[in-house]
Image (cartoon, rainbow, N blue to C red; front, side):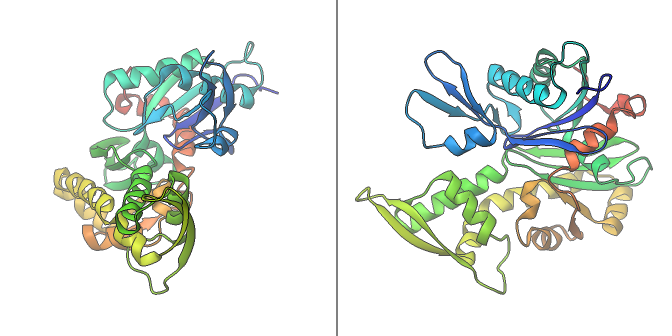
Length: 335
């Protein structure tokens, strides 16, 4: 039952979309939709559609409407948001929610407009946008209200963002349009080069989550996966170890380190000294990769730590931003 006009925060991510109100995260669904190709009707959304990924006939298309953190397919995104908003607040004819939705830092005005209009069309009363790093900082309660520096690195599925914040605003930031999905791609390519076996994106993601790491680990884990032999086209099992995954992920992780480094270069020295004392907060799903904090600490020369709620801090911060709208207004992206 919808209360009198809810305040909702939405984290519209490449991999997952989350909705929260002031008290808790209401729902988390993979940002993925299954559509009938012929008459463009929606067959399934979220978890249900994800299970169909790579396992459907040609009459059904399973698509991710976001690419690298921005909307690639406007109509599907709108349908998805509409479905999720209805699930959260029932029929919204009477009470339409106020929504704060996150967008990556440094998206173009056209991309911002697309998100803004999709949320309005999906059935919200008013919508505001907030940059992801700012939302993440609010979600993990960093003291961004003071004139001292705080740094966040968000390792999302489609893009990676590093930002330094002070006085409720972003001082310097960079967005790398590559994220967790690119780590999966790197594993797929590595296995194909080394073993001549093709594995799927889903398998690569399982490898990354179960045995993957950013730096060599003390204990070597291994995992057997089924792939398709490139020569014969027949199934073939292979066993991969943690060390191999570490090797496979080196290149995409270098790009993440570079992004962090460029942000620090652009940051005023006074703020850099604050950040050295406080460390860098790591959030997003990519922050759960083993040893990524060690890798960033070593490469940036600043202690990096994993926050308590890496997956949900952006959506929690977006909700917190609604009552603070007047203070934040000058720093939020204008549509």
